[in-house]
Length: 184
Image (cartoon, rainbow, N blue to C red; front, side):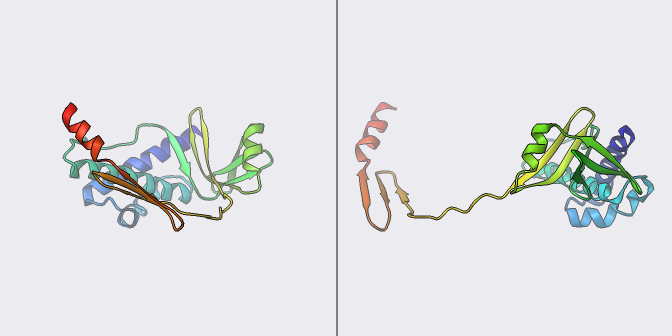
């Protein structure tokens, strides 16, 4: 299992290197450039896609920092981790993840975690595995609320108006503007 964490980090760094060399930070362009290059790594293909996605996020963050004028060093992934949103299952009290072709590893889950993910409207979307931690990302379908009324707020320097279809309230704020200007 430790080897898979190291390989995932290397795949992220390789994708970052390819993205920097080709000035690619979008997920689509980075996928086209680096997917074939990642074939040299002995890892299930679902992890290659997630490594490319992770690298695209790192490169997009770097690009945003440069655009804002912030200094940026060459990015790279340090932490050994495994992130995936594909081909994993929660079965028999554990999380089953692929580690090689035809081989799966079952990681036991706590009772609390099993109770949370077995609720009717909860779906496990992805997982992150580090040396000493397993994090599950879940989605909860919430019940839709019926909107009974809406309220609009119009705020200007000297007045505030709040209202809906039935009632409107107007508040004069010119006195607060005068007090604020005299105390500064």
